[in-house]
Length: 312
Image (cartoon, rainbow, N blue to C red; front, side, top):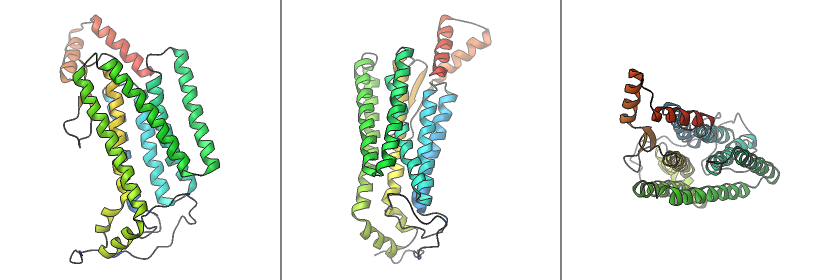
């Protein structure tokens, strides 16, 4: 079909540095077809999106003085990518646990940020204990059951609860502040969920049509066969979709804190990487005030809010 394209043929399985495989899941990408050091090359490479976006998100938290809980969220999100690289590179069960449990912990970190917002210290502590207990419970149960469906269903349930609560807060508390921004945020969360679920969809296709895809890859050779590595596409799509949802939560906090005059959502197009940045006018105003040695009630309140942000 595309025999006229220059291509490198797929070789035989190389001698593996990591065998035997102990993971409870294997994927449609053939193992060790390029090197004996990496089991699934494309599944490893595409996880770099998590590392990149994690660094970008954490950098923005400190650069623009967002609540520090979001730095923890982006760090945990990055651990998902690191764990997945180790898992797909070695096919070891211990690395699989790092990958999959990090997904649970990232979602629970966002749950803590959402359910503890504007609560008393006692309630915040109870929410923290609850999230830690749920995470440890799922980890121990999954280690005992070794059933990937248990992990997938647990993660899905946490995400449903998290998104449901966040959507309720968006309509109940944010629409009255700004209907325009609420509609924009609905567009954002819908797009993030769509991209994430599309990743699930292509992974299912990868499972269903694995034999046909493997035959096609060997017919067309490398690098053209890489396009059909649908689990690799899952990494790209779920990584991007998850990042959109994290930034959505970050922007929701900005509006709930009444800081729309200080921050803005920078998201020029659907496929662009969103971020919540300080408005240039706010930076210029703060810089002028500092230069003149002026202290206003607004500046004092801003400093207080900044202190609270670093605490949470």
